[in-house]
Length: 380
Image 1 (tube, rainbow, N blue to C red):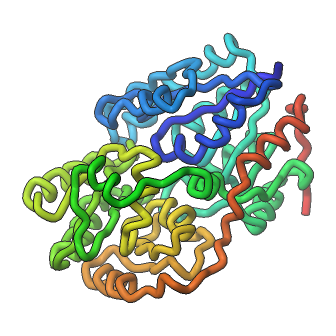
Image 2: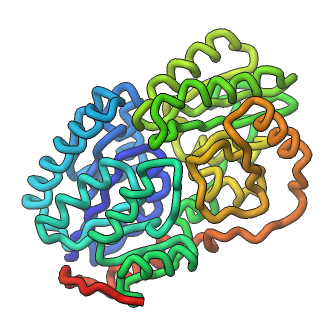
């Protein structure tokens, strides 16, 4: 049996990978090796590895990278711990291929360990651009360490080839996050209110804001501007999801906690909503507000507008449901006004695929194994 090793480090990334994990787990010709690391193992971020087990997926190994700090030095130390642990785990498990998604620091640690230990990598969501975060450089670096590439649009496929990857190894399959929306049975409104312990209001906003990691000490100022813009809204429920373990993330968590404490009648916050609750919530929102990639890729499937703040996602392909604004109170207020008058009855073409990415990825991996780890540079 071919051993497919899938690695996840955050709740959001697990949500994107969950259908592919399910397909691998159920395939009689494959053996799933599921490695869990990063925020999943942190009590501060909700011990979300428990959600994975609750979904029925056996965890092969837990890679603890000791996320004790969100400073630059602390994150680099965590990466070094993760890299060493991944190398030892790869030596023990001997997977036929490692599947990685995205651009986070723990994924970079896994990719570099796989490169040195001679294990081929399949990378999902390469070729994208996010100019406001160091994730951008990490993503392209993982591309150069990988052997099979699964992009979410044709433009991104061309960019991966531009980076020197052979065209026959680069596949435009769409975004796996779209798959989950189309395959999950989402919760009804009353059931969701009961599970989240809240009552939706006349207007409802889902707020997810992350630090812009290429900017020093900007998180507090920018998130405070967002809170000022939200503060004046009448009869509006604000649902906050807390940021990932990025550099500077803890200051945003502190501001969310303080705001929710002072405004209990109109706010609620979650360390982790879980995939089903998160996606179910989106369908009842007037808009999703913040700077998360989910606002660009997954939210438009619901034909719900996304207010995209600042430069964190600058460079991504966006559709007409995305309303861009600056991280300033008045700019955010103007964007919210546009969101509240957005025509949700009009159907737009979504640029990130038809919801079959996971099936395509699995079929291609099975057909391409075993993968030759020697690569030659493709010149345009």
